[in-house]
Length: 61
View 1 (cartoon, helix red, strand yellow):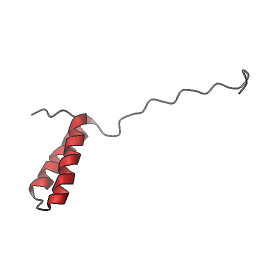
View 2 (spheres, rainbow, N blue to C red):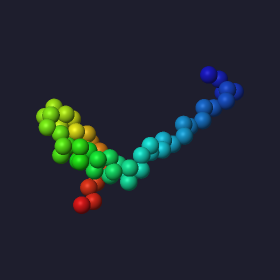
View 3 (tube, rainbow, N blue to C red):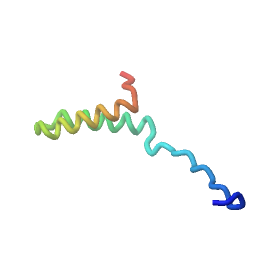
View 4 (cartoon, rainbow, N blue to C red):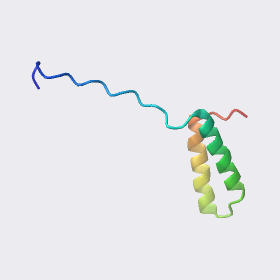
């Protein structure tokens, strides 16, 4: 690339796909689903996802 080439522009800043309220709602929905789930493998997956969501949204309660 020579000095006369057009400089590359910086990529635009990434925006969050989900709001904080969305994340909290997803966590509550997972909690509700987990209470009705008897499959231990599915419950483990639900718990892991709930935990990962919690690392982005601190539990306010």
